[in-house]
Structure formats: structure tokens, C-alpha cells
Image (tube, rainbow, N blue to C red):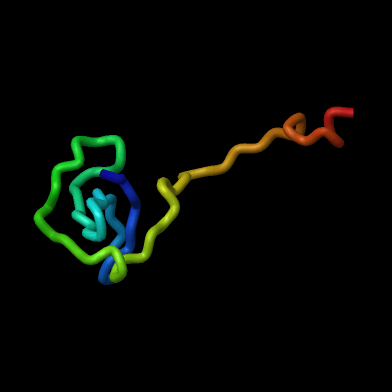
Length: 68
């Protein structure tokens, strides 16, 4: 069993992948993974990055040239 974020028929969803079948689930990857009953062949979905960050934080001292 693999957990993935997928796009299927224009919708983005968390899914459980079992062999070559994608099972769409309710909630995100950190929830209970309750299957919706909707499935799709793996070849018909687009795999996405695991999570979509809400923001990216960087500080100047993260860069060696700025720490000087």
C-alpha cells in the first residue's frame, strides 16, 4: 500500500495505491484514509507532490554567503 496525492478527472485527492489501482480517500495523508469507493487505474491519474506547502519560509542566515 502506498499513499499518494493524485489528480483524477480534474480533481486533486489523496489516494491509496494498491498494485495498479488507485483508491481515492477522504481527508489528507495524515487522516484515517477512509476510502470513498471511487477507483481508477494508475495509468489514468497524474501523481502529484506529496503535500502542497501553504508557505515557504527562508531566513538570510540560511545562506552561507549572508552569514559572513
